[in-house]
Image 1 (tube, rainbow, N blue to C red):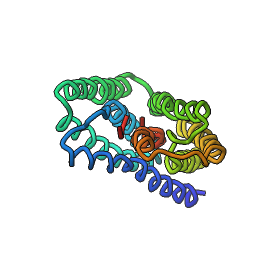
Image 2 (cartoon, rainbow, N blue to C red):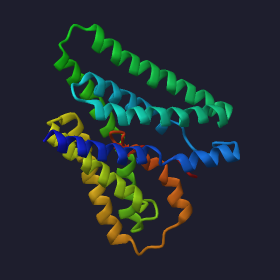
Image 3 (cartoon, rainbow, N blue to C red):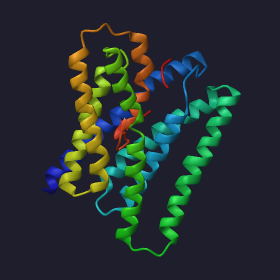
Image 4 (cartoon, one colour):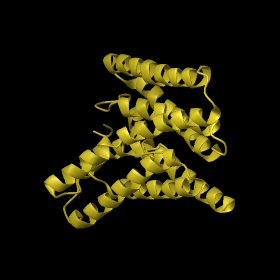
Length: 245
């Protein structure tokens, strides 16, 4: 059982890292043009917070190494994305990004760490509190795929729901759900189970409306947003959340 759990966890790590890396094309464009254009920084700031919390969960929970490693990679990549926003954004967006980083990635994360460390609670309760916070944040981050699904049904077009992003939401959610079941981890299981479910629905919708002509430009608009659908965001992955546009 341990060998199987390790194998699934490694596979999940690989898939999640690919999802974390999905906005690289977008940020290469930002660097090349020297401007963030109409892109928003908030999804990356929130994903950085999510990854930080999952790393904290992974190092606090016994045998949570695989959760910590993949989100450690997520922290590095998301920190790079946020830094590029601080470099290439307009002064107003740069200020907004800096405020969000201070409030979320420093403030909220710092409060969670301090409270769970300073309050006299046992290790099991500490893991449960951190896990619950991580799971709630990831469920909240599913607003983007739900909006995309509504758009597909309304317009009867997959223009705003690129296939590979739906596929990786399905694959990432499914892999980590299996891992969570084997590891009996409800905090990984609930958000990733939701991700797997939404990914499945998205693939079904894609098969129904796939013959509709897809706009490449519109697909790029959504591509970056959808990295935030993963959970172990990731994101589960998930991730996520706003990107090309």
